[in-house]
Length: 319
Image (tube, rainbow, N blue to C red; front, side, top):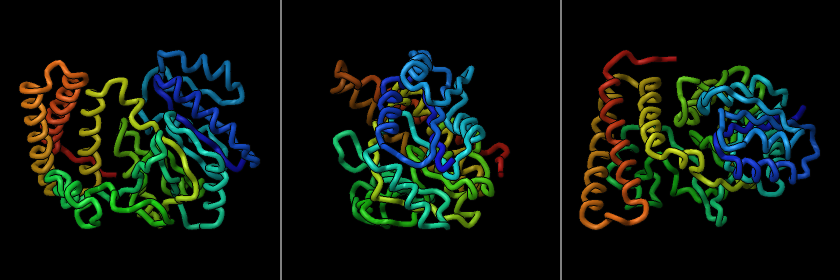
């Protein structure tokens, strides 16, 4: 088995149907398998997969285990030399799987690679990341990354200065689409299941680098990502989960002092934005579509920041 494709899905039936259709339309000639791990969807996802894609291996979790654990369940069932971990809201463009596998074949030191990710209108979606630091979080808190979008120095974690047009070693790749080498995975280990959703991607990439494997961006392969479709099911909750994951990552990889400093930066960042959003809602946005939801998301992020900042002073788990 050359390739195992693993897709975690949660209440994303329409997007999963398009994702699976794009996979089987690739005309990929090498032996491969597709494994869908469903996190207890309530929208008929599993019925759709059984009826329309009987060749897919379907795993039905009895509850939502989150992104990391569900992917690990699929990985344990897989047999491929390479593993493609693909979000359910991703659509592959013709030749994507072939390009990715060929790229991995040609570069034996690669542990993880990722394709060029596009929005639905085919504009670029930045998918390359720097490891989180106090400096790049400070830049994002002050908005310096937006004031100087072409600057590597002020860019924050998102490499928006990089046009994503060449092969490049990067600290991390977003988890929307990874291709992973089995032999590297066997040495690095599975995704850290303490991350329910978010931050497991940069954590895994860091662990691959620490184990001597490269993380490489491959622009010749392309895929469309309908970003945030799963989180759209409950945006307020997912804003809080994102904040929780951020501090989990820092608690795992950084000192207590760094976690304390990050807490100050994050509280300033989200406190100012929550206050501005609340003021804008009170003065000008009342009644406008989505205004209330945006305010709730800002407040949820700020409340989550306060909560995890306090928890950061408790025991910090290291791997």
